[in-house]
Amino acid sequence: MTPGARADETAESIGREVASRKRSAVEVARSYLERADRSAKRLSTYLHRDAERTLADAASVDARIASGETLGPLAGVPIALKDNLCTRGIPTTCGSRILEGYLPPYDAHVVERLREAGAVFTGKTNCDEFAMGSSTENSAYFPTRNPWDLERVPGGSSGGSAATVAALEAPVALGSDTGGSVRQPAAFCGVFGLKPTYGAVSRYGLVAFASSLDQIGPFARTARDAALLYNAICGRDERDMTSRAEAVPVPLEEVERGVKGMKLGIPRDLIGEGVDPEILASLDRVAKALADEGAEVLDVTLPHARYSIATYYLIAPAEASSNLARYDGVRYGFRAKNETDLQGMYAATRGKGFGREVRRRILLGTYALSAGYYDAYYLRAMKVRTLIRKDFDEALARADAILLPTTPTPPFKIGEKVDDPLAMYLNDVFSVPASLAGAPALSFPAGMTRSALPIGLQLVGRPFDEAKLFRIARTWERRNPDALRVPPIAVGGGG
Amino acid sequence: MPIDAKVVHDVAALSRLRVDPSDEARFVTELKSILSYVEQLQALDVSGIEPTSQVGAGTVTPLREDQVKPCDVREEALAQAPDRDGDYFRVPQVV
Image (cartoon, rainbow over the protein chains, first blue to last red):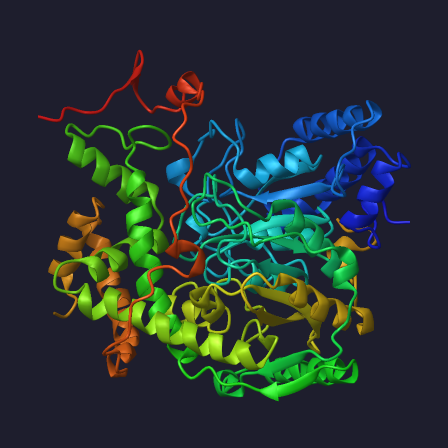
């Protein structure tokens, strides 16, 4: 048997075993730490790990259970956290030099919730700096590798979280998604990744990138695990004024209800040309399988969705340029040395502390918001966003969910797009539309290419109807012979 | 106005971002390429369309009671300061 974590293990099965005291949380934590010890360095999945702390957390979960406390289904479950989620007293860098050594004085809302639920944190995962990127190559520290092919990117920006789950270093993880940063890496790494409805999860303690788009979402290797983690973090929190009580947990029995009678729309007009033929074949295969299970497959149109990337790359940098104004070298993080006046210190700190992609987006956002350009760029983009939203409203009035690829291509090679920002941005062409619409979207594994790279497809639903997305993905998963497959690095010797 | 080195320089000043002169040319090229791509939005008729600054959840402002709550993190917060003087953050000379 493979040492360390088992391939057939899920967050759900771990939670059950720990609750019934068949295994201790410490035993479970140890098996995942062992796994991570063998592959995390080669994959560069983590920015920060602390085995002692992880084991101490696990021991306190065991103590809570021994004292008779009833914890939820995630008790004793190891969970990896993207490094843009604040963890009290634990380094939180967002993959940036400007936050090197920063120890937040508070936990993010989701971290608090998971601690209460008895989850055990494995560490902080690598990401593109301030979540800006689609490959995790923009981390100021190192790029993360795709567990299925170490020469390829894991996607981004939550690449570390996606890769650590795919490689069995953690059964589940949290990431954040602004224009696809959970879904795209989930697709590239062959796992499930959910961007919840805008407002479903409190962002308190998530380092802000583009506040009208940011959402925190789960990575998992099964649809049920994705639902369990979503259930543990959703709902109203008064510290994030956008969070809503309509976001309620989805019972696992609901996830099993199948797709009979459901209407599934395919936006052929958006999918268009330039999509990898193996991904298109997978889309057809999944649509047919879901039709066999009783869903009605129909065509929908999203006529303005093709303007999504242009819209997004005005709105997101504009919001980022404002959100990132707080990094000034005064109160925490990096400060440039030898500057004799305050303005010089600000400019030097930010110039040196931010990487190229972040600087580019700050410049772009500031330009789009500046006097004389606001109407032509930012205001116009917000109006086009309205058109895109209305497309989704109309399509989702006809269909219960929309099915489309998560990405136009399988994972690309490290270095392939890093010098061409626009080519990198265009990789998000299918994930950005749902972000602009605020709709929930789930990427699920839908087979492999002939060269053994994962394919992900995406489901977009009505606001606060995550349940149907889980049901549809679960229906496919039940029929999918590749379910719970693991990459070579996580099999056998592993290291 | 087309993007050139002066525009990059001015926007960098607005952003409180020191751009190395050797980086300026590359930023000009990259920003030009992105802005020429977003130019496609100019072709759309958006007259009479309301802008979306936030969706659903962001469009209402929920209120809560204004209560005093303890927040005892002063030392933890100050411990993060790059430069500190007692209970103050120290910065280079302002005037």
